[in-house]
View 1 (cartoon, rainbow, N blue to C red):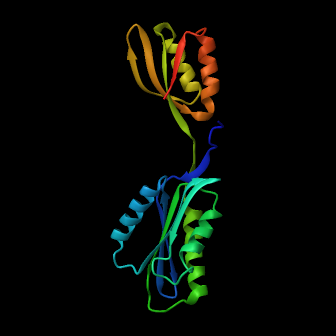
View 2 (view 1 turned 135 degrees about the vertical axis):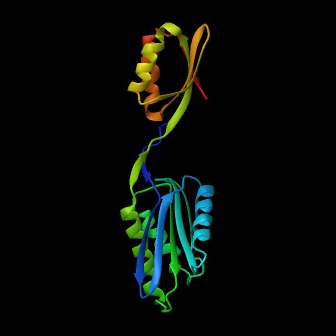
View 3 (view 1 turned 120 degrees about the horizontal axis):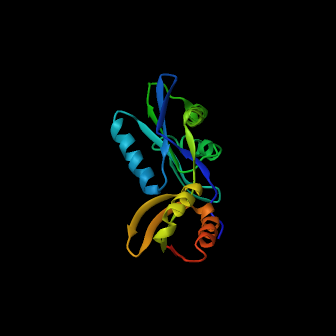
Length: 204
């Protein structure tokens, strides 16, 4: 089975504000790697701005062909808020992201076209400001080997961008290691060669 490819995700929560005909549009973008975390973040943002009239949102959990999406107009006229927010998010080449656009009404109605533009612009602006990093799929494995290989094993773990999560020492050394999924096959080959096959690799 091929390893999931790295994809861009948010590094930190980012917020911008646009003023459109006296209405404040406060857009917040942040990491949401599960639907549950997206809903929890939405609830937190709602609670932080109880004076707002609408908390429109869109999220995409995952990336590429494996995505869960959600959105809401949150009381705005149907199709004027959630769909344009999601459309901009879809085109932003980023995964695991929640965007919440909070509107504090300024007394002037914007009309259907005005709402679509305002929510689209707010979403686009916050996503342009959002810092990103690559999400790399990682996997934990167990290793058991003679203690004489310990120092060389540590060097190889570092070389293959892994980290040691736990280690115990008895007659042999036992490690629990997390590595990028894409590196596991090559790493396994290297340590098997290094130990002449005297290593047990445990896949959890």
